Image (cartoon, rainbow over the protein chains, first blue to last red):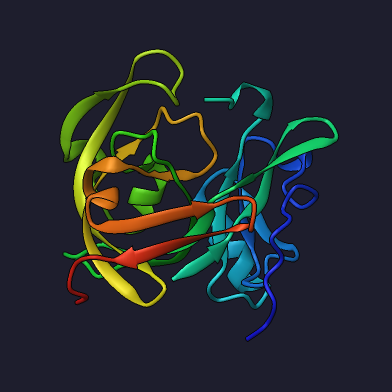
Length: 66
Length: 141
């Protein structure tokens, strides 16, 4: 099984704030993004990644201390 | 099932925190539409399980048709969630779960909380070692 990257801090950068992103299964790169998960999946699949990992990138992580 | 903590988000520039996050599959039990991997946080402080509303739409749910409940804590002001039965897949195990889908969630990941999730699994967090273990307490499908 391919090794999965567990450090996402550089991948989920502010460049993608308020966007849905699709990562490759190894979580090493963003293979699609957009304003909705459907768009992110669509772009990922057009890039050859059938089963991407979906997540959302928020604008301000500083408020997420709960 | 052991999962490593992930360095998932930045709190401030240059600093980050390890979180017990993992990828779950999501299945609409009626339509069988699926999402192969959605990143969620195993959150012992969350009352229940909450995913973003748009994720529900991907698997064909009419999100706002679900039972409406108020929600607070990880949202902007007063918020709503809509409950729907779904199937989640974790490490090859399929689990029936009622999830609140919300368009008001301010947290980036879905949340797996006490109701529905922690009551079905034994969960051991070992942050110093860098992993957490989820042990199935109910029979797999």
